[in-house]
Length: 421
Ligand code: AMP
Ligand code: GLY
Image (cartoon, rainbow, N blue to C red; front, side, top):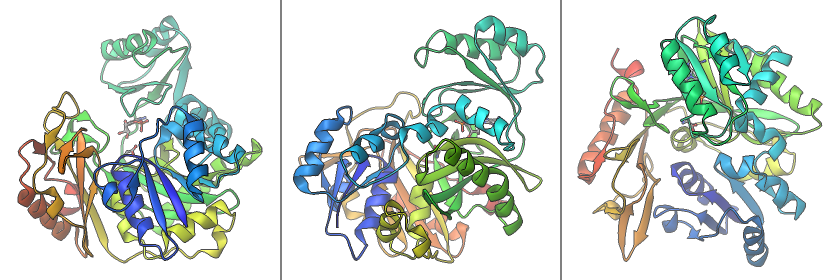
């Protein structure tokens, strides 16, 4: 089967790697891909703002299945467009991708279907927000109602910080804003919980723990994710049943009441307190770097699973998982998540190959004249699977030290809650 993967991050390299081991695969196109995907697929640079150009290429090359990695094309309706052209595509349609595209849409859905989440208020003006802020306890969270790669979320310790956040959002920092979301700050431990769905049935797709802050000890600015491990140490049968009964199933019911169906990965960002789950947010895709740490644990053919989802036949699939622990540490460009240098060469990277237990997934890289250059903030994902998180972390850190990239930095404490107790 000839397939195309849309996206250029670590998540998409991990998808390309896992799909490349399928018995059914004949050719993979990465659109646009990175220096890592280039080794296992054909990178094609198509402007994703123009869906027609993408369709022309898919049609010309007789690509049989398209897997969409990132949220932006999903929220913009790429799935609806390709379906209208009779292309088989894995990912949710625009109407349900609003679960990630609009935090207010999701909050209203939670309210209607009684899904546990932080208490909230939608405010339609600065005045409305300021009036409301005086009645809320601190800390609280102010959120812009747009896709902002995690940057539209402000955790505020006092009224002044909250007012600044409201002002920034209404003043257009993330584009035009007609409303903001103000919500209660939830205490507890975060967990990333995944399902895969074919629109009729769904299966769980493992759990992970992400480290979003840039600094050791989970301090400093929020990032896209500095590392992750899977499975999450928080998960147990009782908690999983609660997540499915109280969060996932009511959400799928809400979608079916909209006369829609959910095809793709669904990622619930949860806060867990006293073994009770609360929904923080939905993402309509795999997490990054959660995907890089989860996929190497699969002991089934991922292409068969995804293809079955597109044919409404997920029930025929038995998704098996290796009984191992997995960890991912992200090597970033110095300065990330603020300013960092572009086009810095990473020497010797070509010598690092994925093996049975070690995986190298590129993110912000490109190749130029036989060199690999760093072009993004998050650059390379080092993944290891083993019987113990501590062994995986040790092995990954050895690998990173061996690479010895001068412009790179990483967090050496990924998994501290499960290792360094
Ligand atoms: P979001 O983009 O909504 O997932 O928010 C980004 C991050 O902000 C989350 O991963 C949490 O760490 C934090 N966060 C968001 N909402 C809340 C909340 N209501 N209570 C506590 N932390 C939150
Ligand atoms: N790792 C967080 C995300 O993918 O949104």
